[in-house]
Length: 146
Image (tube, rainbow, N blue to C red; front, side, top):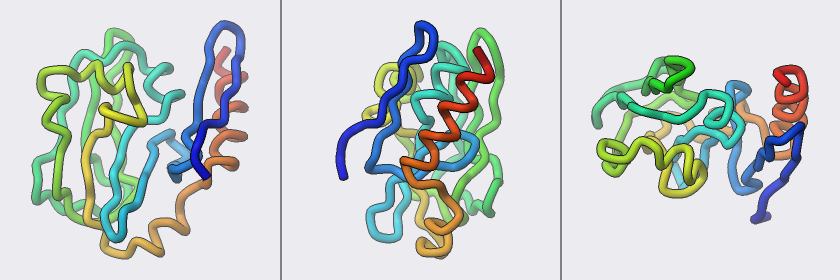
């Protein structure tokens, strides 16, 4: 099930990658076995604004569910990102050190944030929204915000 769900609200177009699961806060999760790659959804990155800086916890950091794994700074806001999975950070995106704007330019591609070796991938998946459920929530949140 590859592809995107897409909606335009006012002058903004938001995309939801169907290959991902989502936290209700707007983080996407893509599992490869027991490793979860994390990033910001298109809606979350657009709502936050142009990302000027990202601070990601280092490799080896142990995360409980909802622990801060990164924070972003934009012209509009500073946002703490809560981990949608429990586990250990095993990789961070090195490209974001020099180009944090990749999160805005390619939120589902080169703009990924980190990879977490999940403590219990099946339990983590059960707590996340599938693309269709997140699309409905995101659409409602976007309409309310505008």
